[in-house]
Length: 123
Image (cartoon, rainbow, N blue to C red; front, side, top):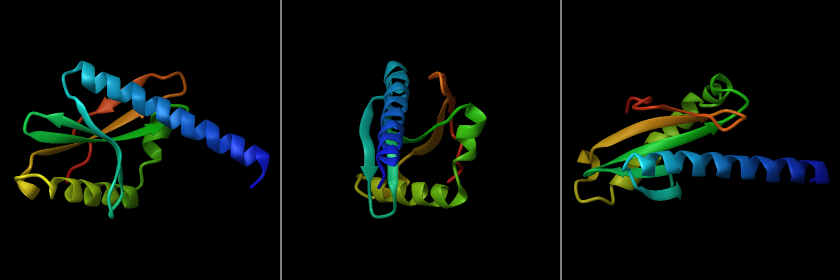
């Protein structure tokens, strides 16, 4: 791997981490505590998981130059993996698949503005 690729990768990682932190603060400020960050299961990874009463909000964070560009990066294949990861996560809960779930997408643009699309993914 070239040095330029290493730097680009490190910058992308830090930008993604900063976007997730910004989104997490918004949820926590709204009274939805973050219970997991970058939760990884066999089916995939969830960027953030927030507690919403007895249920959970699964949050996919997408960052890019604009909100539209960020939304474009969410593929059908990735959505399938998000559903699989969420199913695996709630399987550990007392109500299992009967646990209340919501799937949000948080879009973060280049200057850090966040747009949250609540219940953006129908499961």
